Amino acid sequence: MERIAIDVGPEFVSLCRADHHAIRAVERHPYRHPREAWLDWVRRLNLSDRHEAVFRCTHPACMNDCTSEAVESWARSVGARWIRRIGGDRREDPSLAVTRFLAGRTRWVFILSLSLSGRLATAAVQDRRGAVLACDQSMLDQNAIAAGAHGLSQLCHSVVNSAATSSTQFSLDRTGLIAIGDSAEAWAPIVSRELRLPEPHVPPQPASWPAIGMLLAPIRLDFTAVREPDASADLAELRREFAALMDAACDGITREGFDLDDTDCARFIRIESPGLGGPPTVVEIGFDELPYGRGQGLACLQKDARVTGLRVSATIHPPCPDWPLDVAPPLVNRC
View (cartoon, rainbow, N blue to C red):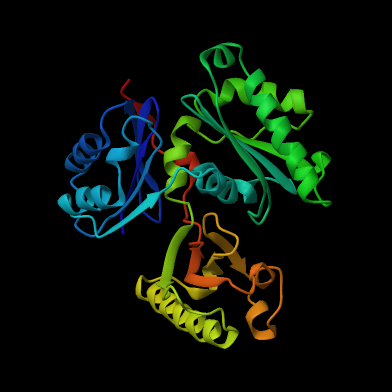
């Protein structure tokens, strides 16, 4: 099945077309409204009706136009069978998926990834399995970009320090840099030298990889249940309701053609405490908490607390495609 990615950034629209065997085409254009860019891209590709589209918008001026309903409407108008929308959260950044894909081509135990798309820079530290130890984003001003790699190095230093705090196993001596995005060939060696890292890994056509990474990103499916306002926090009832949500998640995952072995699930409850006031709180519940009736998540339940909602979030990690990087098509830059 063919897949396309539409990445609408602050300055550019990046596009990618691929199937399981190869990256077929990549393009980048100056910013235009995402609907226009999407429709023009699909018309020129002459895609089949069973393609999948992955969409992301980080342009401040048009994010209000890119609601889930609008994106689904655009997808239907061009015959897309499946549509995924990647949010602007830093832990959904495509550079994290690119690192997981490229990690096997390196010998490093830990990987510092750095991506620059326009003025948006994303840095993260992951292990070889793809687990994220630290992640941060920064919108660089023009002066920082003009100064070269200094602003990027500062962001990397901050992320490396956070990784060292979050994991006692992390060591900068066993870490290497994977760099993608605009002008990565120029700034990646400078950042590596400043952090005293080995020679960085920069994949072919690095400016195209943020869009390519969207086709590698994990898929997230949410399954929710709303409870009555006067519903209690009875553990037996919560067990039954979560069991029903997990059944719905398994059914939805397999119906979409994904493997349960490639899926991680997390459970959350929405708590309201009238006695405390303030906004509702969302708390993750560990899988061993409900059977035993205790744990960090359940400890947040006060005597007068009401559980007003449940959610199961399924994160699917599709198998990596067989993409030979040495024959990737050239980036068509229509700037």
